[in-house]
Image 1 (cartoon, rainbow, N blue to C red):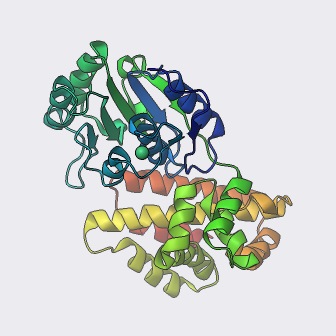
Image 2: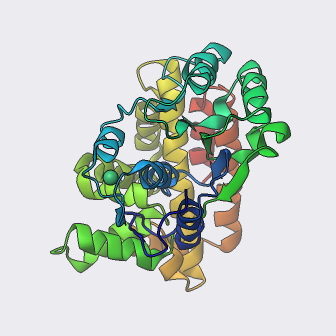
Amino acid sequence: MMLEENISINWPIIGHRKIIKYLTKSIKSDSVAQSYLFYGPGNVGKNTVAHSFIKGLLCNDKTSRPCNNCLNCKKIENRNHPDISYLERSNESKNISIDEIRENVIHKHFLSSFSGSYKISIISGAENLSIGAANSLLKTLEEPKTKSIIILIANNADNLPKTIKSRCQMIEFNLVAQDDIKDFIKKTEPEIDHARLTNITYLSEGRPGLAWHYLHIPEFLKEREDCSNSLIKMLNSDINNRFSEITIITDGGSFQEGLNNTVKHIDNWLSVLRDVLLIKFNLKKHTINYFAHDKISNYSTAYSTKKIISMINKLVIIKDKTRQNINPRLMLENFFIDI
Ligand SMILES: [Zn+2]
């Protein structure tokens, strides 16, 4: 059924205007696809858009969607709408299994909708589908039932089989413009001072989800800053202190936690070194670690471009090897001896 053309559709989304325009138009004209793949960087708003999209579809209001007041809106908000299923990889599993796909998606799509409306499945982290799960899902995508929608969400579409992608309406998400992030921060925290506003804007790197976390969870912001600061601290230390710091970073309780903590630190160190280069080339507004600009500027004067690039290349290799479960401690010790 076509909706009235003048129905207002307001979604609380930061950026992604073209995508919202496209999806709202498909709701208004009753031309939604049966399967979508939302893909693009993490924390940019793919899940939030999916959430708004299904609310926009199922909301009962005739003039404004979502109304956030009707039974459907409330049930979607509370994640207990009987026609919507959510699936993502559990923390204990390596991937999404065939049984999980059968139970949470396929079986549910064979049942009739409770309200006579759409049956919808949202699969987050779709790049984690096992081969069996992907094949099983493919059969459902090839024989879609009317009023049935499957939304796959993935940070990296390259990891999904081509056969799945070819069945989906592909919707690519990109990083959000810095000005949109800034407006969002100002709206969330109107009294914010300039330094904090700039710091959170830069650190968010075009990802509204990160901005939200930095604003609402102080420890999250502190942890990010501490990770970046640890490189600056180590560059200023003697070899004994550097080695002690490496031990703390690589020894994370369990072996796996140590590896994860190391990768997290290296990611931040790479962002610091990238900033050193950018400041060297007068591209300060593209940097990430605003809170440490003064210290980073010192290195952009002290280090040659060649040295910075060499450090970046070495850290990228160490990060790759750490991801392959090679103990990073010795590699990091050598890295800091060489500087
Ligand atoms: Zn509603």
